[in-house]
Length: 416
Image (tube, rainbow, N blue to C red):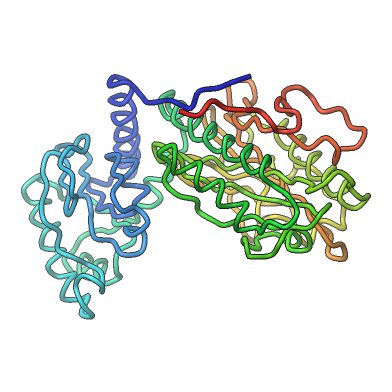
């Protein structure tokens, strides 16, 4: 099976994508009585106006911001380009970071708030205002001015939960690019290469196809696979070690491809490796089968796969989480973590979720990470990530065609 990675939305699809996303934000604003969001998170900016400039820089030094009213024109501060969808006005920013504005952020906040106040007055806005992650001096100044202040992050997270057809096209493209990178890693993997060298292949494929970045450097081998969340290093991969990874890939159009697989660098798996792999495979397969519209987060947690006790201590941080432009709401924890860390809600049609397992015992050398990305449909779920499992680690288990459509993962994609 060959797939072309050439893809772009046509003009009508692109218009629908942007109208849908802005409409979702404004719908949530109306529900909450918020008449203005002040936005600087690069993910929110991408969602609201498809902003794609210096996104990682913006994540830690916010140089641009957007004024997004519940109705009427949008005003963008600091953008280099002047053709962002739904933006009618561009202005120079009044900086609100130490890098740009110096150490007196209270003084910077005073000037910044004046801009916002002028916009509110010009557009007849007097209701609640929601800010993203600005300095606390911004909130202090806004409250002193008598404004009712909300947090804009929850507005955008709620808006992003339900995906449009155009968003799903973009996400499928990111997943196809990620799986091309996975196949290239799989083909290149050999004893003696370092974890960093292997992971660099995924980065290269993503960038070559117009992707953005990778959120983490999650690739480990041998004893570094257990416990999980040890990022890639210069350790050399040895023969018959496990190699586990999590893509965390922000691909073309800004959409996430979040896929985990574990491979054997060789052909002689041991019993411990096969046992952990089988456990992770069984957990992900069972938990995917639970997904359907209307099921509550707490019910999912209670019905989730009952893990072997030896794998509980080193469990992953969640069993399900949302996916869109990045890891998104909701995050559904394991039963043992309820109710200390978690919250309830309802799974809805057209949510995209990632279903995860890490299986590694505290007294054993290696662990196994598996993760699939799925779309919640009217009747259950549809698998979005199609990369296959390594059958030699599954022993005698019968792997379904749906869940192992790529066999050993050595499927070729035709590169654009």
